[in-house]
Image (cartoon, rainbow, N blue to C red; front, side, top):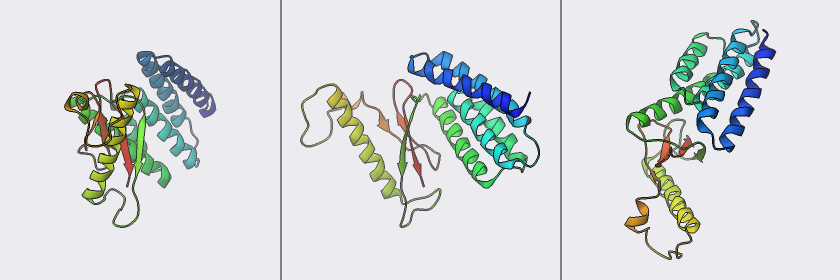
Length: 204
């Protein structure tokens, strides 16, 4: 089969996976995402020489799909395999390394008993002393505190609790709200939750 045939099949499976997510069927969504990733990997192998941009886009797509399907081992292996070819454009290499950071962060969280819900909270910081992969600690802490405050306020609003004019949330409520924690990754700020939490992923 050609690249186009595998890629088309992958797109259809990915769409089905998204519909499964919206329907509240995570196990089925994971299976579909993994099948889509396998088709994308097959498409990667079918690419002709010289089409490096297509090769890069396809590699990133395959790793992303395995990541969405929570098959972190396959995502990591394929990312390394793709990078080892030496035939990827710079943008794809950067995206694959970023995906590897996310895979490692989730794997570390799983070992620690922390689960993340689907979805991302993207937090970007730039300018001044901010460089790729690094930023002043006080700046990151302020970002974390700001996001955590928004989470508390959102929960209080959804629960129709009295509007809090000053101070932090009570201990009773704060134990039920996801708390931001900086992981060992240089670019992941996972929001810890009870049913699989969101990641706040800063672009540094």
